[in-house]
Structure formats: structure tokens, C-alpha cells
Image (cartoon, rainbow, N blue to C red; front, side, top):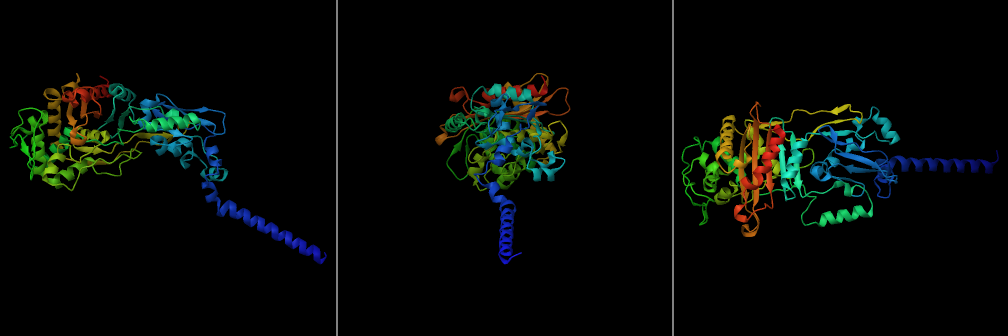
Length: 485
């Protein structure tokens, strides 16, 4: 071999080595950056090359997939989309995903390692397994009753099974059809712009992402704090509460909507929702006691997920006595989601124990093989069992003889609490109508459902708006659906 041939051979070998090194750099060292590049559509194309798994309610899918024949082949479809939108959210080729579509995306898209018997092979081949299914805890009849009851008014409903924490209904209105956002066409972009600019905010999940002043429904929490602290020991004893009640350190006088609240007992004050009694009770319990009880129920918890995140309900811990008085009747800075207030009712119904609410019962492979199942949820004793028994009596009195008679159900024991929450500059806004409740059929050993309803734009004159008139009938229908009555 001549000198020139040897030089050429060595040079070619060097070029080959350089080529291999560069290929190694691109495919291994810099693979992550190329995968993450916005210009790389391979992962997106692969993601939509197979149908997405389904979200199930009562064993039946409320989602599906349709073959478009396009490069991004499969689009998400929804059955009764507006009914289940606060639960499913949307899965869009253009705008990503929300709620269960987002929280359970690994299972639904087929990328969760649990779906594959050979995860390493999937990593090498970069092919996802068939999408799995997500089984929800929803009760279809309860979901439909809540949606029908709100009847296009702005509001929300949350229902929980007290003994387990299973979420039975989660409704927010006005709603929207998630199918409008599934694709990546101009029609999808137009729907996105329209929904986001709609002043009624149909994409806002009011059940878990909107907080409201809970008004008099918060008196359940205040009553629990007073009973646990020993501020009240007899439900029928006078509370020594003047009417009107001057807020401590101010000249402001707090009044009541009706008469008979002067020195009323806790039973009378709860039944007729006396602001003066509960404002004074909150002050008597003190900031520390009220804060501990509110936080035990779930207020100020920034980590609640069901499995998607829930906006934290708040109870202000830095208040003076006047502010504490207002906070104790669900005003000032006190704010709650409907799910939070359903948790309050559920804790009372469950002998003072609060189960963490959850929405996913389990996941399966496409063929039905179980991947994950329902596990016992954490439980917290938020009040003494004896306090819970007393609160159940107070709440049943509200439905039997007080402001919540519209929630009564033949063949069941029902406990409830009404609320009318003021808001807006100078309380000029249309009051929010609230109702929280629980129900136990006569043949059941324990309560089977706890519900919270809020109606933002109650269809009545301002002076006639009430939780008992506007929200209680909706709660009644949801509870009847769950109990089968």
C-alpha cells in the first residue's frame, strides 16, 4: 500500500469516527433537547396515532375518540360534554388538557409504565401502550339531578359519600362542550377565544376552583368550635347574645334578618340562623380555637387534590375581634369552594370524621385488567363524636322546623343549613344562595350523601333570595338520586 493510499484510508477512517461521534452526540447526549424542541412534532404525532383511553361513570364511558384521517389522527370526543366537563376537563391537540384528562393523562394516553408488561421495550421503540381507562366515583343520577337543578343559572354542586370520601357529583354551570376544543383547526381556535371571552365564564370550574363567602353555612363550623371548646354545653341554654350585637372595638351593630335572636339558645340560633349569636360565639371561642376548627375541616389547605388541584378555602388567621365576629358568620375574608362545604357537611354526618375526597375509583387496561383500585383514604377526626351528634340534631331541626324545610325527603332523615352570603362593594351584589346538607334513608345504618349547593344568580328578588328557597331544592334532588328515593 502506497503512502498516499494509507493517508487517504486514515483520513476516511477519521471522518467515519467523527460521523459516529456526532451521531452519538445527537442521539444520546442532546436527545433530550431535540425531544423538547417545539419544532419536533414526532412525539405529538405519535401521541395521536391511537385512540385515547376512556373516563367512565357508572361503568359507562363518557368520552371516546374519533379517527379523523389527519396527521394527528385521533381526536377526543365527549358524551354529555357539558354535564361532565367539570370532571373530565378537555384534551385538546392545540391547548393541552385539564382536570381528569390532565391528571390521568399517563393512563389515558398509554404512556404510563404500568400499562406495559415490557416498559423498557416501550422506551426503546418509543411506542405507547394502548390507553387505559379511568373509573370515576360519580353517581350518574346525582350528577344529572345537580345539573338539571341548576338549570343554566350560575352556580355549583358538590356531593360526597361521608363514610368514604367518594365524590358523587361535581357540577358547575354554565358549562361548555369540551369536544369543541379537541382538534387543532380554526374552528377550535374560534371556540377557545369565544369561551375565554365569555363573561359567564363557562370554563371556570366553580365546584373546585371558585371560592365564595359561605355565609351562614359556615355557622356549622362555628357551632362545632363552640361545642368542642365548651363555650356552649347545653343546646337549649341561653347564649347571652344581645340583638343587635356591637362588633368589639367598633360602633358597628350587627343585626339579624328576623326576630327572636336576643339571648337565643344555640338550637334556636342555628334553626333560624341568628348572625348575632354566632358572631359572639366566634369571639368567645377566640382566633386560635376558630382557626384550629376551620383548618381541621380543610380550610387553608393548599395541597388538596382529587386528583386535580382544588383551590384552597380560606379562614383568615390574622384578625381582630370584630373581624373574627364577621369571619365566624362566613363573611369578611372567609371563602370556601362548594367541595369544601360538602366536606363540612360530610364530617358532621360521619360522626366528626372527615375522609379526604377523591374522584378516581381506579384505573384499568383497555381490556379491563385492573391497574389500581380504590384504597382507604386518610381520615381526620375534626371534632368530638359527641359534638357531631349534637350538630346532626341541629341540622335536622333546620330541615324539620327551620329555614331548610325545602330539603325534606320522605323516607329519609335530612340535616341541613341554609346560607345567604353578601358580596360586592357595599354588599351591592346579588347574594349567593347556599345550602349544605346530608341525608340518611330510613333503612340505612349511616348517612350516604353530603351535598353543598351554591347559586350565584338566584332567580328571585333580592329580599327573597335564600339558601332555603333557591339552593335547598337542588340539594334535595341530588340526595334523593343517591338514596334512590
